[in-house]
Amino acid sequence: MANQQTVPTDWNEFVSDMNEQFMEAMEQNMEAQASFVEQWSEAVDAQQMNQPEMEEGLEGYKDAYQAWMDAADQMVDRVNDSMDGEEVDPSEFRDIWLNTANSAFKDVMETTAFAAWTGSTVQQMMETQRQADQMAEDTLEQLGFATDEQVVEVGDRLVELERRQHAVEQKLDKVLEHLED
Image 1 (tube, rainbow, N blue to C red):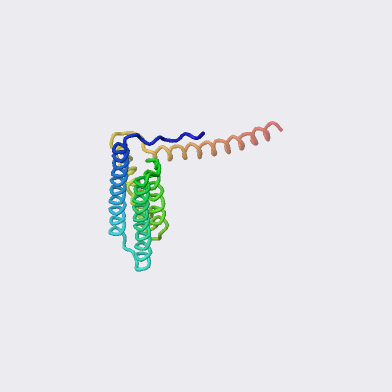
Image 2: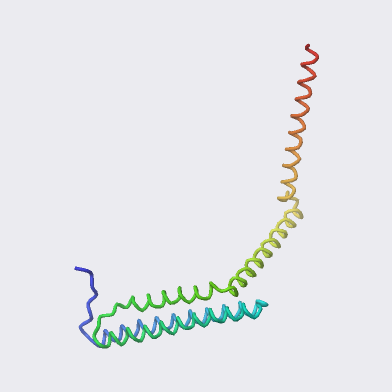
C-alpha cells in the first residue's frame, strides 16, 4: 500500500498545521511576486524599448500576474478541500507555487523585452569584464610583471625565430650537399 500521511487526530492541530503551511506558502509567494515585479521594473526602466516591445513585455507580465492569481485560487480551493475533510498533502501548496513560478517566469522570459534586457545585461557584464581585464593588465605592468599581451608577443616572436631557424637550416643543408658533390 502507498505511503499515506495520516490526518492528526486533533482537528485543531490539523487546521493549525494547514494554516501555518498556507501562510508560509503565501508569504513565499508574496516575496517571489515582489522580487519579480522589482526585477521587471528595473528591466523596463533600464531599456529604451519601442512600443511593440513594451506592449509585449507588459502582456508577458500580465500573463505572469494571472498565473499568480490562479495559484492563489488553487491554494484557496485546496484549503477549502481540507476544511471539507479531504486529505491534502501540505507539499501540494509548495508545488502549486513552484509550478506557478516556473510558468510566470516563462511567460516573461519569452518576450522580446526580456531578451533585450538580457542582451543589455550581458553586454554590460562583458564591458565590465573588459575593464577588469584592462585594470589587471595595467596593474601587472606597473608591478613589473609580464602581461598576457607581452607573453603572447614573446611567444609569437619565438615561433617566428623557429621558423627562420628552420629555413636557415634547410638552406645550410643544401649548401653542404652542394659542397659535398
